[in-house]
Image 1 (spheres, rainbow, N blue to C red):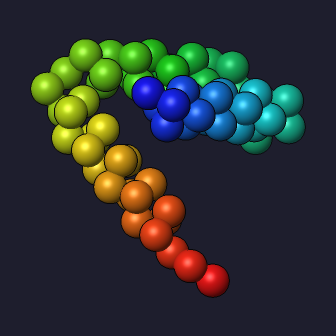
Image 2 (tube, rainbow, N blue to C red):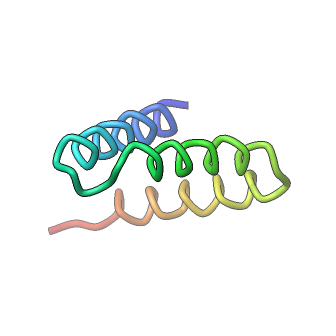
Length: 64
């Protein structure tokens, strides 16, 4: 749960920065938000969640 909240917060901040920096307009940003919202209710959501969790675990195990 903490990971998904962090990812949502990070992506939200990136989206705000892109809108304020004029890199992305409000229309495409709304489309991207709606796409993510509706994608979360499909059958692909568990697969995407597993992929992101495994990616986070992989990054977590990297030592410098």
